[in-house]
Length: 199
Image (tube, rainbow, N blue to C red):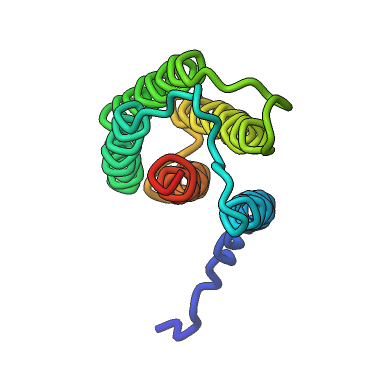
């Protein structure tokens, strides 16, 4: 009777999580950028109000309905994006792709709502006694750029999932896209409160 053991091949090395690390650094950079913008906005608004001035020009029309619709759309998109993560972790590619597609449709809705809101605000950059219009356009415009980048990221990860690169064994791309998406929702929540509600 032979009592030797069979040598098994070495297990494949665990894949590095480069995309998660990169997205973590990207999220940190975006949060720092918007933190700086919010700091400038709140400081300027505080200085104007401390001398009794009006921060928003009188002819401006900043309604709460469009930002309210945007925040609710984004909050629902968080659940839908988490559905994509849940589905890909369970090898349910069909539902993962459906969730990614639904998230992209909701993202398009947010962009349309932003565009309509900007066209209705009646703010002119560099006009008036305050820098309110310039800062509002800078914050909202920067957010729209970051949001389009997020939509492209989600779409690319959806295509990679469609091609079979992501499954229950490898979920990093979908998870990374969802983390960036969640950070965008958090940033808009601050925009909603600081810029549109507190005016």
